[in-house]
Image (tube, rainbow, N blue to C red; front, side):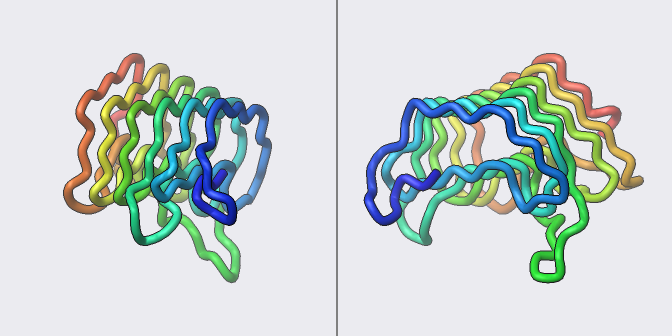
Length: 173
């Protein structure tokens, strides 16, 4: 979903439900340059992905992506081998791209059973601001032999103003 493409305009009040994919590039990509993407519900995502499962990012190298009220629930995902063209395994499972403003992101029932990639489960890239990040009932299982950050900042100047974690099990990572 791209709010600033051929015909710019806000994207709002969207529900995405039921994505099943194995060995896929990604499940959902939300993009904004300056026009907001808001009130989006993404639920019931199952599969393996070689770049990321869900990305929230800006569209171009200018402007500041604008997102509000993004709810993601019932995600059962991990990384898988990439392709010849896209080796993959370099992005967080849930990626918040660089240089954007996200008013509220809620993740619930997020489950990662990882045996391949050690990037964060939730990654926040450079110069992004998240006002409210709420994570409920999440589990991360790591079979890589290397610690995996559950939430990780990837670059400088990323910020979470209010963080709520409830029933989050990282199995020691």
